[in-house]
Image (cartoon, rainbow, N blue to C red; front, top):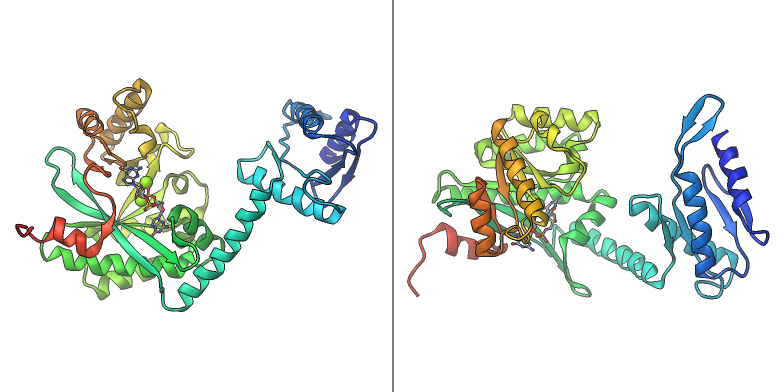
Length: 374
Ligand code: C2E
Ligand code: MG
Ligand code: MG
């Protein structure tokens, strides 16, 4: 009934030249001959405005959102089939951008898609060749007052011949999309555990942070693997912190909650990464299974000038401390940022101010073994 009401109402909004067709499920296509970008945008605005108000069928009320992808004949393609492919690509982008929006197709979109496909197949080859072209770098985090190194975050790097160094911001989602994050994540954990064990000889309280994708948490063999690796390297779990992005903590997924519980039983610490960029509220911090909250750089930048950011971090730190959660501030670059962060009582800081992520041997030289005079 909702679909019927939607289709009938949208048809009323169409100019006489345009026609609407039903695809699968809740997908529709509108063909609007002769329309340029301006007319198409205006039509989208009308449909959007209609959808985003309360609707009623009998006694039930409901809301609708509408995601749209637009392709233009001549400009984007010359046949209906081609145009449809372009419109669907644009629709996909609208959905990725949080839905309820419109995207016009562009050639860039095709480039992005092609690049993603090619990178994915190269990533697959790297994994098949024993994690070839992957390596880890380490970024120290320090006590905010003494600036003494408390540990490091292990960060994954990957490069390939044709594309050079590719950012993890780009390749991690690709690994996630094809499921390869599970084996790669296991390799990362093992590498990090091995390195941590080595550095513990010089600094007995050293902590190693490892980023974990939510897909790894959903993998049934993950917890056993963590247990097995810690045993194999004889590393006490208190030296490992697993970092998960904020969105993992707000989901209703039972499997994730269960995995958190099992990790806590193993005595492994959990950090909520990139706090402030996702959907959690301050209120939920009190029920969170996190031992550590890492506040994203977004709020650190210009902290000495931005009253809101300062007040936000201040409130987060106070709330976390009241329930025994430690706070790390990420992305501290400038001395002014350090001063501001110290003044509001963050426990640890991480960022270019101390060091950017560096290879293991450089980390050892700078932070683990005593430096030799040069
Ligand atoms: P993240 O876990 O929040 O890591 C911190 C990111 O901030 C790193 O980017 C680091 O280089 C960057 N950063 C540190 N200090 C500063 C600073 O002072 N200023 C600025 N502008 N940036 C700073 P990187 O290495 O590019 O990693 C990006 C993201 O990729 C990570 O964000 C993490 O979410 C993901 N990632 C990296 N390695 C892994 C991994 O092994 N597994 C998974 N699942 N994700 C990973
Ligand atoms: Mg992290
Ligand atoms: Mg982060």
